[in-house]
Image 1: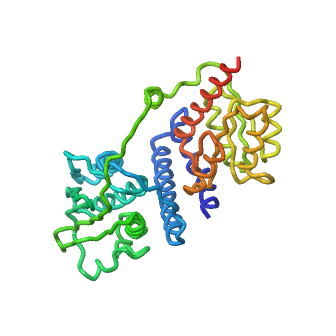
Image 2: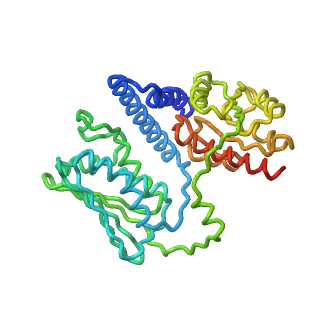
Image 3: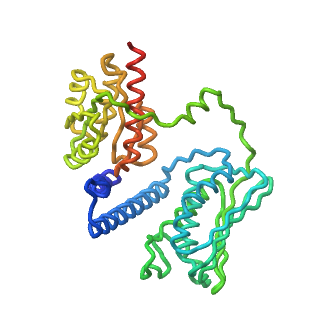
Length: 372
């Protein structure tokens, strides 16, 4: 279902992003319509992700990557992500100032997901000009993170229904968008990380959502100077030479989208193939600088095509970027282990796509220089 739902969204959001940055620019009325399409499209993608995430968790197939996570770092990232939403609603956000290094045992990505869910709810269901206060308290065994809001609060009968899937406690008739999935997701994720979650609420005063995770010690990190320098390097621009790009894709809308993106870059020439076998033949004969590869292709799939390209001495050096609607974490992990240079999920974000393409072209140029 992930693939079937994401494929049409890729065309909707992709072309809307192109229209949003077109030249000449859209009229104010057109711009307003495009903004509405993009807002609704990205929100629909969030809902799809939430529903699929919940399905994976309920099936017991979610794999976590637990490590020692710095709360100070995660809080800064969440503050940057959620700040604009708070500003839009006129809510004052207060985050803890960390004098000590707090570390918890958690999956970093899922911990951020829980925090963003709870923070987003605290903003959406607050009163006008309200406040949200985030706090942390730690013992050697457990660390508690609390998120206090100044909303309407919840009576006891609603508190008992809080962590039920798709139950929005009557908010489905409000102006605030939501599915009732966020809290149940947060509960499942916290429990999978070995923690507990709870809430205290007073009608007319607000609510405090909290969760506890196992405390951990600061990990020992070592990075060689060259590695640190490489991480700090800015992305290198493509330059003036002509580059050739091969896109292997059987969906006409997806192909048209990438064609229109690449048309804006006169230094890139795009070729295309509609299945894996023809893509391999074109790659062998034309030697493109970079290959874009869909996964679900007629005949051999993208993973099989990648393996053939890597085993062939004439194509093994070409970086291959996956562009796929197979967007679950296991799909991405499988793709990266198979040897894709990058793995872009549909619906594509144009900036992310061009950043990955720039890196692949630079990689191709460096290896071409090495060969000469």
